[in-house]
Amino acid sequence: MKFYIILGNGFTIDFINHFSQIDKNIFNKIDVKNLFRLGDQVNIPTENRKGLLSYRSCPALWMLGARPSNTDQEATTLIEEVITCANMFSDFIGTKTDDAKLKLKESIKDKIYLQAYSELVSYLIRLFSHYNEAISDTDLEEFINASNWGWITFFKALKENNHEATFITYNYDIWLERIFKLLNIEFSIHGFNINPKTINIIKPHGSISFTTKNEHYPYTFVNSNIFEEASFEQLRLSYDNLTNNVKGAIIPPAGDSARLQSAWSNLLRKQAQEQAKTISPSDEVILCGMSYWHVDRRELDSILTSLPQDTNFTFINPPPPRELNAVLVTMFKQYTVYSSAKNIGDIIHGRHLR
Image (tube, rainbow, N blue to C red; front, side):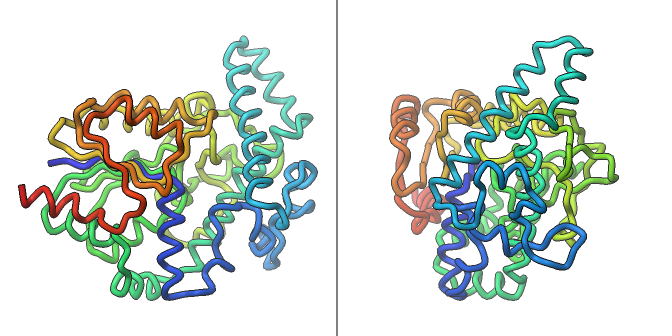
C-alpha cells in the first residue's frame, strides 16, 4: 500500500495550533495566516535590527499597503493582487521574442507590483526562516512526546509498517522534515537526494531549505529579475543557519509554478503529477489544508486529474472549501472528509483490520 499526501497551509496551521499546548505564546512568535502581522519582528538582512516589513526594506510592498497592522483579509488580498500580476506578466513575457523579453525584464523596476513580488519572495524566505528559529529541537521533541496530534500517530504508523509515501507539500517551512528527523524517519527531498527513500518529499513551491550556491541567483530584495529560470544546479539543500539567507527558491502563496516558468519548480510540479499516476485504487490519497484560489487551482487540478477515480481519497479540512469539495465529490468515488487530523492514524490501522 502506498500513500500520496498533499499538504497545504492548513497542515502548518494545525501544527501550530497543537504546538500551542506546550507554548501558549507561540501565536506571538508565528503567524502563517497573516504573513504581514509579525513582519516587523524579523531582522533586516545584514543588520542586527528588526523591521523587515518596512519602507526601508520592502518599499514596493509598503507603498501597496503591507503593514503589520493588516487584517488577515487585507494581507491575503494584497498578496493575491501581487501574485496575480506576476502570473500574468510571466505569461505575457512568454509570448514575446528574445529581444522583447529582455526589454520587458529590464522594465520590471518601473512596475511596482512586480517589484513587490520580488520583495515578497525574499521577505517570505526571511520570515519563515525566522519562524523556524522560534521552535527549538528540544521544544519540538517535547511536542512529539506529549502531543495528541493525529499526524504524529500517522507518521509513527508509516515508519512501523514501512509504508511507501510521497508527500507533496506546498509549505515553505521545514517542520515536517524536522519532525521526521526526530522520529528517525528517513526521507528524501526530490531534486536533491540521489537515492530515493521510502518517504519522498516534493516541494513544488520551494522551501526555506532550498538555498543558493552563489550570489548570482536572481532572487534579491532590490531589482531582482524574477522571471529568469533557475535550476537545481544553482541550489543546495540546507537546514542550517537559514536566518542568514536573503536568497532562495520559493513561489509565494497563490503563485502558479506553471506560469512563472521557473526550471526547478516546473520539474517538481511535473514530478508530483508523475507520482500521482503511480497511485492505484488500493492505495490511499490524503489532502490536507489546501485552498482552492482561482490563481492556483490549475496546479492542484493537474494532480487530481492524474489520480485514479476509484482510489481511497481523504480530505482533512474544517470545513473544506465549497468549490474544492464539489470537485472532489464529482471525481472520487471513495471520498471521505475529516474535520480534523485527530483520527488520521486510523487510515493505516483500519486497513490492517480488514
